[in-house]
Length: 161
Ligand code: FES
Ligand code: FES
Image (cartoon, rainbow, N blue to C red):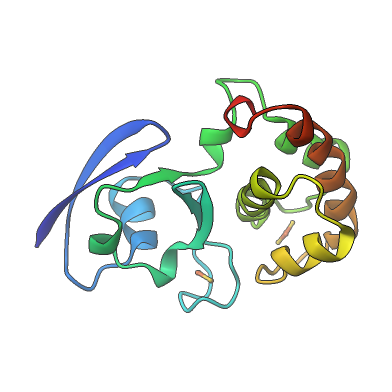
């Protein structure tokens, strides 16, 4: 066992982990962050995505020991208390979700894209999001939701979003 420290949504968290334990299981099972979804455990669905230092990563493909010291953001970390972020609001306003199981991963991945490329074209958005699977098939609503939110990313620094 090794003790690791993570900064999760601005809060210092520690966990004792096995050498082969993945970040996904530590976040969900040890730290209780259930918005990070587990579905395939092998990098195929993208639903376990979180931000590591602001970039979307699949947490089932990262060993917890590799993440020691990392800044991790889950979907809760985008909102300000009860206030949703522009991207979260846009997903709601465009009906870009049905069951919501995939929504945290899509929102975080879109955030990762827009912070680096707020002028992303339709094809760039589709390409960037292509590693994620929505079983409800709400892709057609997600694209306008992301494009609408992109206006905020063009106006503000990502820290303000
Ligand atoms: S659970 Fe990680 S990609 Fe599916
Ligand atoms: S909204 Fe149900 S899996 Fe995407």
